[in-house]
Length: 151
Image (cartoon, one colour):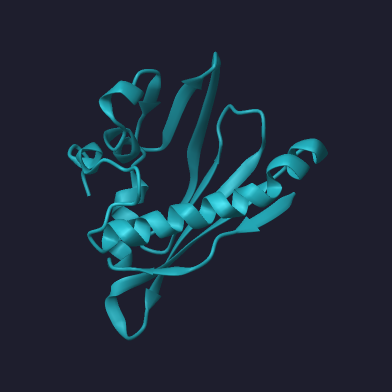
């Protein structure tokens, strides 16, 4: 198993607020633009999508309230777990130290092609969440895509 960790960044939301946004997989469908929702299904515990004729998905493996959500592969070709971490900031209760950790069983060639890019992608997710929490939209993101999300 290969391990990849994002950077840790301070998000301008309390841990319970972030946890509640991530805990229900249906929230992720609500954030997709209408034209991207076709073929995407979700319930409280899982989300899946049809991509080039193949169904890919993740399922919640574990929830530690207001602290961590662990997701795992649910139908894709690569076994992985994704830890979504919400750490309280001791002197600022309305802020969260947020980071992601991935463990993946990548074939050697895939690891060589995408391994370094995986950490960059995780860091971009963290940066995007920080930007949104501060009222900024990451470049290329339409704020209307969040209108149906239940946070």
